[in-house]
Image 1 (cartoon, rainbow, N blue to C red):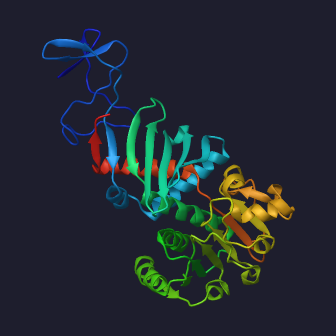
Image 2 (image 1 turned 90 degrees about the vertical axis):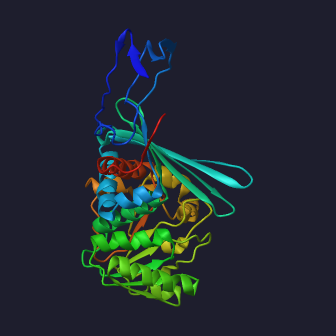
Image 3 (image 1 turned 135 degrees about the vertical axis):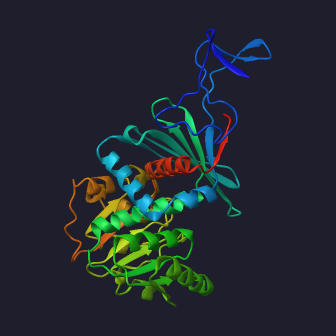
Length: 372
């Protein structure tokens, strides 16, 4: 099959976001893009053709896991928040539609200097199923360039956001970490924080003894740090420099009595109104509160709901992480105050990390090219 446009043959071409691979590297057919007035010539017959784009890279979870490291995620997430702070990126808040049995979540972002635009779409159901997909588009041509399974990416970018906030907000000498939760998100919280602070001991609490013991064994091996399962939630919090809550709790469990001077807390588990990990009385004790986005936190930060309703919390006292990353707000309470990073998750994180993964996978020859 030949590619023709207005009487002349089109040669394969590349775009800045989609460089040409070596011949035959990924697929057998020619790379081509058909524009206005073009047609496909097949067996001597010329037939009208719609506008076509280049083949699209499809990355499975295994491909993403092979490429994506926490160092890469930390670098990408920091760049994403810098772009937000410089007004060089746009972020669309998460939207949800529901059936009787499942929820579809959609979010999107664009950043001209990152070279792309993207969406994350994922579904969750009462059965506990979850399917995650990131789509990436060329920022100049608008071409679809990548479809990416994104469960692992989501875990890593969430951990990286906490790592970024911890690096900027927490005490530089912080060495003791407490973690609530023993799932996938909890693991990347520990991994990211160990990258930005010299953590010497981690204590983990989960209501399920087997889960917390298995978590301690696995994370100790992967992060190279002592991880100890504890029997009560108070043990995971008391005496810690940094605490992370990464649970599925619907009702608050973190009480104000666990907070101590100089402590930094990352709260990442609750991203629905009506869900909370921290009691309102605990929220009132924080000297500094930073969120990934006030716009999205207004819609999803259930931990703030009571304080906003009774007036004990004002949005004027809450800072965007992009402002902290960009230096517009300096956290002065890290040494003696109590600080909070409340995360609900942004599409700019998925875009920034996704573009890094896409570029590395393309360079390494990973994934599968599909016709689009």
